[in-house]
Structure formats: structure tokens, C-alpha cells
Length: 493
Image 1: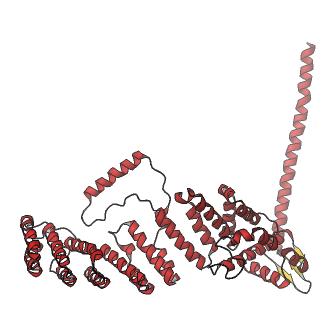
Image 2: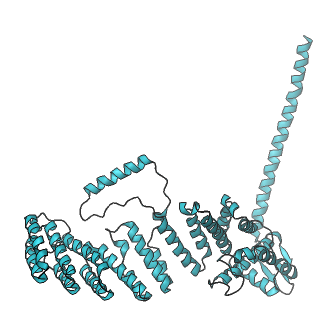
Image 3: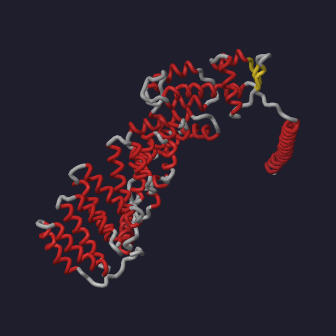
């Protein structure tokens, strides 16, 4: 049968099947092969008559008899044979595959289980109507390989599936599959592939939905029931309203791992902000504090640019920071244009920061190899902040004075200034013979003229305003005495 539609049965074999099934099951106790032969004769008639219900029942009966006989090779043989029958009904094959999948847990040993899995993978290969079943079997095979310690094989087997294209699979199951693929790639160390796979998941699926009233829930339930009644056999079932908190947290945990590996601190901060916007995290004070802390740490570690600066100020204004006063104090230092000496920062905040899994003050202090690098990056961000503050308040400064303000050597001072100039964060020119750093940006004639023109315009505007106010006062002064005189004359009368 080539098309996906269900053909109307030419003849109904229900009565014949009802009669034959008990007989075949009884015969199977003494002669399995004879019982199967008997069923195959009727199967041919039901298949040719397009009697889906009867064909499905016979196929299920044949594989069940094979399994109950304990001859698993016979089961594999029958599954292959039945699936290749000319004009085999698609829904009947699907039903048979689903039943055999249920037998996997009863396999006497791993080799038998693997042989059944391989048979099912062969039967389902390249067939759209059993793509979901193939995906589930492949997942079981991948799990077995992982348990055996063969991560590479487990990853290769599972990643060959393009589940995002499966129309009949529910969105939740698709997401679970992709998350498992990403987890295996991370475990294998294939970071590029993990990043590519994770982009297949749309974050809109995780967006927080407003709470619905009981009336809305009841209405949606009725609508789903109506859709279910009108649904054709080949259509996927309607998506139920599902709580995806577990998937959301798992997804962002993986994204944080990927971003940390590539040292994309601003991305890590954004992912933690998404974790914060989860009801389960908001209701758990411990998780909430941990997420708030990491949002602050990673926004501070991110290199300075307009986006980072904007995000830093928004995070600083978050009222929930009162739960983590020490970290709130640290983020405040980065929002005010004042110098902060690194030795003081390290002494005041060091013990608290190193008590978390994000920072290490010494190399190899914890299991995270990048924790010490993040501590060095924090020092770098403090120094960069100080250089920006100096550039804001000074037009020219001597190098000895600058090194004193930054708590650095001359070489380090020059290095950090060069980096910020390269990143176009500040403008600076170092005059080495004179030992002076010039932060004032040279202006061409056009800029000077434009500024003068702007100043003159502003001055003329102010003069015009003053002239208007003086005229107004003079007019008020002229009006005032006449009122007083009128008052006097009226009293005289």
C-alpha cells in the first residue's frame, strides 16, 4: 500500500480472526510453526482485503506466539517477513513494531535484546510511518552503548536522528531527544556539534505562560477533545498543555556549560537570567540566591561594551539583590565612576567569591580548571574599570601617578591601556619620552567649529530668553501701580 490513507476493507474478517486466534494459541503449545502457518494463511486474506483491524490482530498474535515460545530468532525472522509482505498495511506494521518494542524488557540477555533492536531498526529504516518508533528504538540502543562506556558510539547512533523533522512526534519528546543528543556531545567533548544541535530547540517553547483561570482551562480541554474526535489516523495527537520547567532548566544548564567552555561570560549571564525567570527557581530561596549571584558574577566578568553596561545597570536595579548584600555591593562598585583598588577588592570580596564554584584564587584549588582564569579575568575587569574612570577625569596624566592609581607596574599599565584603546573603549596616546598619557581626543577644525557654533546658538537662545523675561517683568511693573491708584479713588468716593 503506497499511500498513507486507510483503505476501506473489502471484507470484514473479524469473526474468522475471533475463531482462529484461540485455536492458534492452543496449537502453539505443541507446534509453534504450525500455529504461525495457520495464522499466515488468514493474514494473506485480511491483507489483500485491506482489513486493517484483523491484519493488526494477526500480526500481533504471530509475534506474541513467537516470543512466548522463547525462540527470539523466530521472532526476528517473523518481524522481517511480515514487514516485507507485498501490500502490507502501514498501520498494521506500526502496531506490530510497537508490540515488539514492549518485548525488549523481557529479553533473557543483552545479546538477544540487541538482536531484536537491530531487527526493528532494519524494519523501520526509511519508513516515515514508523519514524517515531525508530527514534525510540535508537534511543534505547544509544543508552545501552552509553552504559557499556562507549560514548562515541552512543553519540553517533543518537545524533543520526533528525527528530526536529518528525511530524508525528510530540514537541516535548523532540526536545528531550535533542537535549540528550547535546548532553552526549558535551560528554564526548564535541563542543561544535553540541552548539549546532542546541540551536534546533526554540527558546519560545520555554517562555513563561500566564496562569489561566479554571474556566479557560475547561474551555481548552473541550477544544482539545473536539480536535481529537476529528483527527485522522495519520495526524499527530494534539499537543497537551505541558509544564516544561524540567526541560527549560536542563536546556539552560547545557547552554551555560557551552558558554562557559567558550568563555562567553555575557551569554552565561543571559542564560542565568532565563533560569531566574522560572517559577520553580523563584519559589526556592536557595536556588534563587545562587542564580542571582551567578548573574552578577558573569555580567561583571563580561568585557565592557554598550550591551554589557546596560545589562549591568539593569541587574544592579533588581530589588531581589537585597537577598545577597555582599554581591550587590560588588556590582555597585562597577556602576559608579570611582576607582576601586584590586588589593582592597580581593581582601573584601575574595573569601566570599572563592567559596563559590565560579572563582578560585589559586590554580588547581577546585575541580573546575577555568575557575582560576575567571579570578584573573575579574582582576582584569577591575583594572579596566579603573582605566576608564581615570580617562573620564583626566585629559593628561603622568605614568608614575597612573601606575600608583591603578596599583600596577608600568608595563602592565601600558598593556591594559593598549587593550582598551584597541577595543575602542577609550582614547589614549602614550608619550614614552615625556612619560605622559594623553586621554584627550584631538579634534579637527570641523569639530571645533561645530562646538563653537553650538555654544553660540545656546548663548543667543539664553539671551533671547533673558530679554523675554525682562520685558515680561517691565510689563508687570507697569500694570501694578494702576491697580493701586484705582483702589485709592474708590475709597475716596
